Length: 60
Image (cartoon, rainbow, N blue to C red; front, top):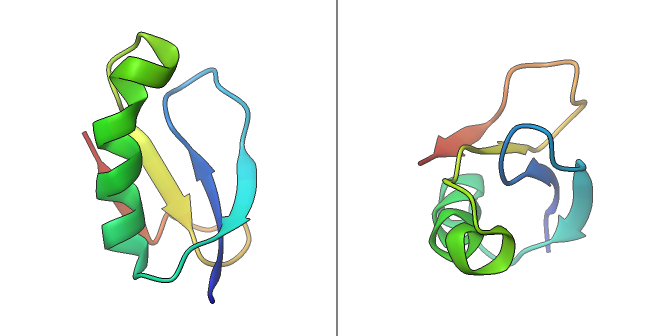
């Protein structure tokens, strides 16, 4: 499974996990859960490499 770093919304911690799908699929899944998990509007960024590079996928 690919390893991704992600941030669900600005100001939240950047975390790392594995996800079976693509970066885009992972970003969409995180955006759907963001409101329930954090009570904030999603602004998801997902990286498939170093976080100093632009995100591989985003979702709102």
